[in-house]
Every structure is written in structure tokens, then in C-alpha cells.
Image 1 (cartoon, rainbow, N blue to C red):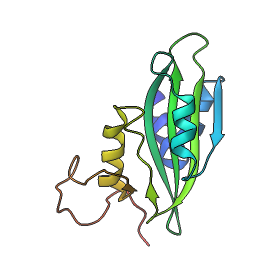
Image 2: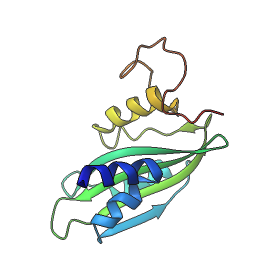
Image 3: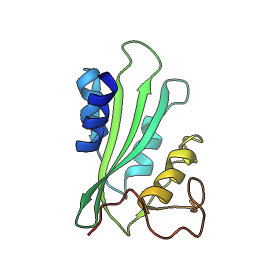
Image 4: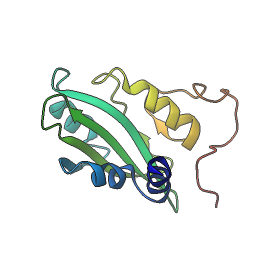
Length: 139
């Protein structure tokens, strides 16, 4: 039952909603593609924050809601989400130079949603020559 509810929440809305319902210590920070790298760079401290995941929600009409989640290591374990909206063809800044582990989430989203993330190539989850983006909404 627990996983079914979580999966439904994930599929029907943002991961933020799903996490927020479980974690009252959630902070949402709106940013832009231009400010994203500096906002996360100013926020992230490797000894204080754990990078959870980068998520994208296909809003249709060639728009994506992009989300980057971080959790504090220490109690009360506040979760912070950076969020912005991007067009399907926008160049999304990579945060790999800030959080090395982010390359995995970035590579998955390039393959599965066809995002254009700076310095991230196709071929991590799917073959490099795979046509399309299997998780992108159909027109």
C-alpha cells in the first residue's frame, strides 16, 4: 500500500508534493536557469547536505518543471528543493562540478526525458543512438 500511494503521487505530480507529505521540514527555492548554478553553489556544503536527486516533470506544451533535492545530514534533516521551469530545448546547467554524484541523475534525465543538460551525453540508461525520450509526454 505505501509504495502504491507513493508511486501514484510521483506519477500524478511533482516529487516535491510526495516528499512534502512525509517531511514537514521542506523548503522550496524558486530559481531560474541563469541563477541555478550560483544558487545551488552558494547553498551546497558537502559536509552539511546530501544530494538526493534531480527530477523533471513534463508539464506538456514543451515545458518541464526541474527539481533538485537536497537533505541536511543533521537533525532536523530539512529537505531543500530548488525548482525552475524550462523549455524542452533549453540548455540546463549541470551541477556536476558542485555535486559530483549529480552526473547520474543528469544522465538519466538526458536519456529518459530528452533534456539538454550541459556537458551530458546520451547513452547512460539507453543506447546512444536511441531515438526519442520514453518518459516524455506524447504530443
